[in-house]
Image 1 (cartoon, rainbow, N blue to C red):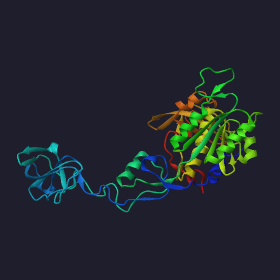
Image 2 (cartoon, rainbow, N blue to C red):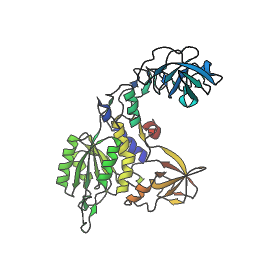
Image 3 (cartoon, one colour):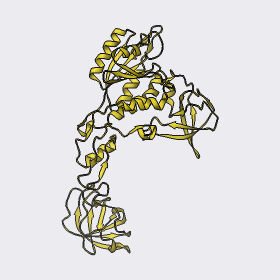
Image 4 (tube, rainbow, N blue to C red):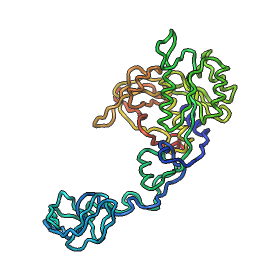
Length: 411
């Protein structure tokens, strides 16, 4: 069996980057910048008010109450008609440009109207409620580096800079299929004896879309080597990667490895991990194939440890792996010391940090435990048993990626 880190490195180093392209801003969510984004101008582009109130000279209102002459009115989107002189104020709305001469804004709540004047009831210091030009982003600075994966907040910043066609790594197209005579579509109303509904394709399709990939669903392929060979051969010509579930173990009807050997190559097919030991990685021509196990928890864990980082890497991301931290075990655990073991755990915050407890049965077919879990506790090779109150590393699979390939695998 291949050690986990060695298998991860083999997968990642085999991933060729996808080409870059410019896309519409609304299509860029989840994609990865292929070049640094440099600000073409300041954000905000001009000094403006952060409150509805009055633009004043701070020195004039240092010892309130003070009455100032109101000499103008500036709405958001308008241009100041003149400066603020000594003893004067200009009514100003949130977002409106600051007039010359003013260096602070007094909130309207701290004033009283007095005809053509305003009575200031609270002192102001220079800069109060004033948003300076470039206070968010300075012109010429690198806003986001190449390799940054775009969230809704990144898209908002790009929009504020007028960058509406960012250059990103192309969205990966991924073909998925399930195998096995026993597997039937989820919409099957009544299960025949020996049949199970397919949970793996919906799981994988959702995980891939969340990742930013385009999904090609090839359905369920029965245990027919000729049909599987045909489907995989076609998938290899139209997808950037192929994911199969089932058919990679040692049984007579586990066909994926056999067909993969005929059509391409197998780099490895067993990893020293639990769950997801029977994981195959290879190529259909030049198209990578990830042969995931048939049990749904194994599918989820293999996706997290191999597929997700690999596709992010292909799309140009720098951060590939979910964050990890140290937690305390809420109960003793016994695991296989010959494998890296991933336990589904729930977490609770205590004064000393996180305490994690395994969720029910840890069998690889118990997908409900994955849905209930907050994280995966990672027990490394050579450890095996951990006591109540022992320290364990936890991988937060509900959180965005924070760790690079170099940080996880070194070099």
